[in-house]
Length: 210
Image (cartoon, rainbow, N blue to C red; front, top):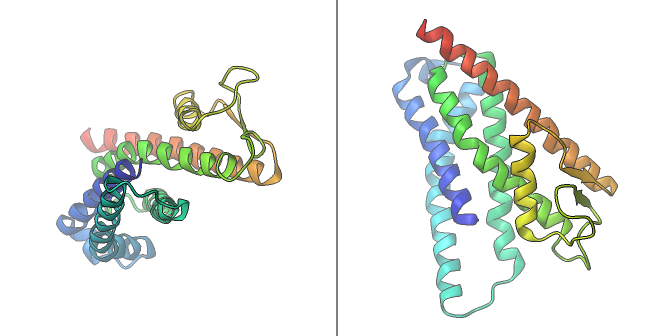
């Protein structure tokens, strides 16, 4: 999972970095969104690629030697990818107000790459909150697309996020506790924004080709 998140995050950031390097309007723009995009693509992205691959290699070596890693060793990179999820989500949504900064095809491609990153990240978040360090799952969120009475597994959380995405927001994840309801609300809000942004980018790309 962490390797997949690393690959998707790096590929998405690399697309933005190349667009920033070749698009003069993005290089010279003074807006906040353009500055954040340049900061992430030119500075944060290269640094975190090195740190991320080093961390993952160290984990792989330790696991290969038969050591059992503590949960926080997995949580640190996963938490970082969740921060990247928020940052890239804000960039994708923020640049919609300045479509001239980056070609519509580039941002549409970013959304396509961002969707599996979104699904895997949210699957981990829901699994982490509801499954780890708890006596039984289902006390924070409830998955409605599993058999009644069945105990949710790790796979089910990722399956539910994919189902919700494909079914255009049809709820398959319900918050049980207050924390769960807040988390599900954030998930649904981000999902609706992605639908809107993807539709807008398709319209911009269509107009650009006419």
